[in-house]
Length: 361
Image 1 (tube, one colour):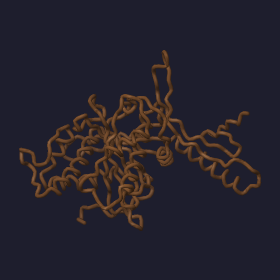
Image 2 (spheres, helix red, strand yellow):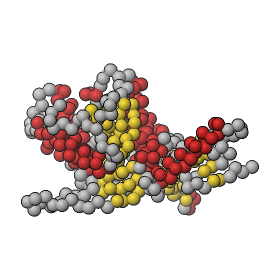
Image 3 (cartoon, one colour):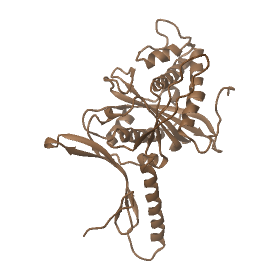
Image 4 (spheres, one colour):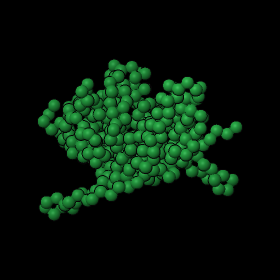
């Protein structure tokens, strides 16, 4: 590894949202830029970010690409770097609370949702960050932690655009995953992109995941000896995780709170200060309440297991999105996220604020 390569690293504990962003901005993307610069491809990445369809090797001949493998490498890196360039326009960061992250990862997928809900993304080109990391099994059977997910826009002709663009036809989710060795060190960072269509007709999250799996094309440089089943399981885990988070922030009354961050001081030489991060905390009010109720239910489950009385085993019904109809002839709709329902040993529903709904005859 070169002296500039940030890997292997051990993440500090606790990991913070700004710490992860700093690692990406100061550690990972400068390496990508250096790789692109080596082949004269920085302008190519900028054209991609601006919505151009230019390919390496086109007529202007500005790229120095010695082989097909290098072409593929440049295309992959340039795509990632272009996503980063578009994120830098607004620098929106969604800091997802750990319990909220795991709850969304388990969210039910079968509720029918109205078309167009994904057009309600509150901020342009955000990146979700996951300070505890979401564990996934990669296609080759090794473990990884999802640390970040960039959301970018694509038009129908597959050129890049802002997520707020009037012609956006799909979102591209770019996952950044820590690859770990046996001692917990980060030995590399995987980057995987999937596309999620923005539908105007009603759909289910399950159908959207299935569409991602059906249309996904494994990148040429990422082909390996992994089984088809292993690749499908990896992509399904990422698609479920990413789409759940995307739908949550698009739903009505999502738990999102903006956290002010001071502007960085101006650099020497009189240049303007950098745009500050726009940090939004996601699930930091409801997540701890879910954790407290879940812990109490786990304690009750242990007590039930050791007791002699015959009772129902405490359990949890998964969180889900629900569509509410309203207005004249119920023609309008809005989508709200409903948190997990906890059921105690008596069959009573326990809300996340501790309220008990008694069993009715």
